[in-house]
Image (tube, rainbow, N blue to C red; front, top):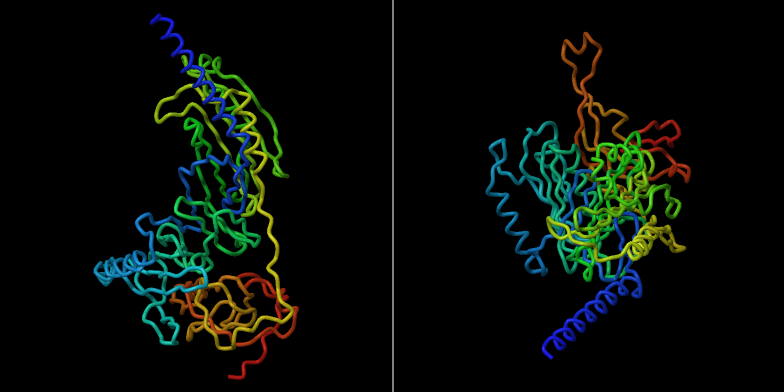
Length: 465
């Protein structure tokens, strides 16, 4: 009787386990998928997903949440504490580490930008603050910049070290200013860059610059299948594309031992276009000893120097449990069904231009100031504040709205030896630009950017000052 009872209990437990595993697997397919907005792309994931890791880096600026800040009061206290810390520190020049800070207060976010830890000496003339007062610094080369921003329910830290990536300092200002939070299920229609994080969702409004470098990565798992992991990574291309996934895999397989390759079962291998993105795919089952796992890879190489079409790599693996492996919780058929649902959902987020009212928006008044790195508030002719040394391209330049305000290239006085060689020394620095004139006609809005040839740009009106 005891043996029969034990068998009944075991059978009941085994049946409950089968039912539970079946229900867990069905949860992957019966529930609607959840859409994540990652960078400039969308991807659908199971509703039971768990975000485990994220990395967002734009033009040398790391954007991370601050776990210790969860209220506006704690944010204000953290700002004050950080400012006090930087005022007590010394830079390599032996002076106070904190040189200055800027306040950002928009409709969606507020915070401060700190400039500190200078490693290179200042040079040249100063800049102006928001009140028009000349400041005693001007050179952002070799300086660290950090921004702490409050987005209503969570805080973000933007950090750029100009020693690691040139001009990352001015990029912090450019990225912090248009920050706004995203609601739980919001998919923005306007151009911009999305960030999914544990603490909240954030969005940087605006189309990318042509040479913008966006390194985007997330990793997510499944609540009811903790052995299943996925990783989505997107990186822009330079002047050439990498070797394709299938080419790299063939080389890697040639280096594997024959014993290991005997345990590999190919489930998918070949080209796979996803939503007009040409790509390649490899899905394999792998047996090592008594354990069988699965691995999945899909990749599109993207386009050369196009931030909207980066290299995109989606990887998945099953049977992962810490530093050791276990049998996959999904059969091959279940795995392929889930994999197809996720891969087929990868697409560039569609955007629409901002709506305009019939009445034209008010113009930025003449005489308005804009600092290097900030978005240009008004299309027109801008005069830089630098005096004395000649400015390459002229001290008055035509800049379009929303373009980043440029640095100036100053031509210094050549040394005797430079005169002999016919060279003229040049150096870059940040400056303050002042709006001096609106464009003469509509054709002016099609002028080329300040750092390119201006043969087709409108001619500036005469300076009446």
